[in-house]
Image 1 (cartoon, rainbow, N blue to C red):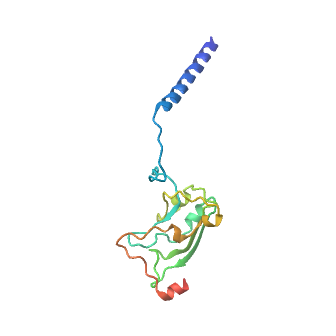
Image 2 (cartoon, rainbow, N blue to C red; image 1 turned 90 degrees about the vertical axis):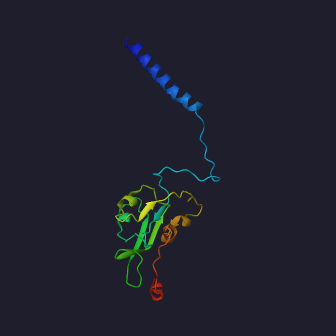
Image 3 (tube, helix red, strand yellow; image 1 turned 120 degrees about the vertical axis):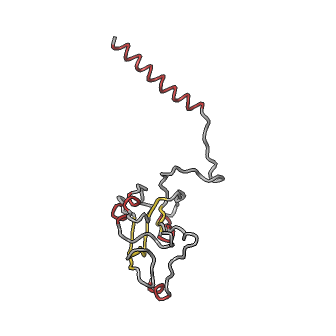
Length: 165
């Protein structure tokens, strides 16, 4: 008697699984015509990192090192520098003079984004980072900075500060 229920249960599971297979076989195929058309991403897609700016065009990063501390792959390298009256890069006391991410090591986990108290680092939708040369996979601050918002004035670097920079 128990064998009949086992056989019926197995048959029902088989029919249920095959119904899903046949239903998917009959649905239309969705193909994206990349690169002719722009790709469609889910909102939660984690692409290459973007260092954000505030509405005034200043960098949001205050070089607190929380993103580097949260990174399990240890792929973020930061050097901090002090903001001065002549050289104001961010809204805080410090700014990231050097901000590098080694994409050879990055696992796109998002811990750096979650750890950032100023929302300075986010995941963008860039996905074309493959390379045969591993040295091109180390992205510098200049590569990741968001463009200056329209109407904002970027920070002005005094000539004597630029020489020291």
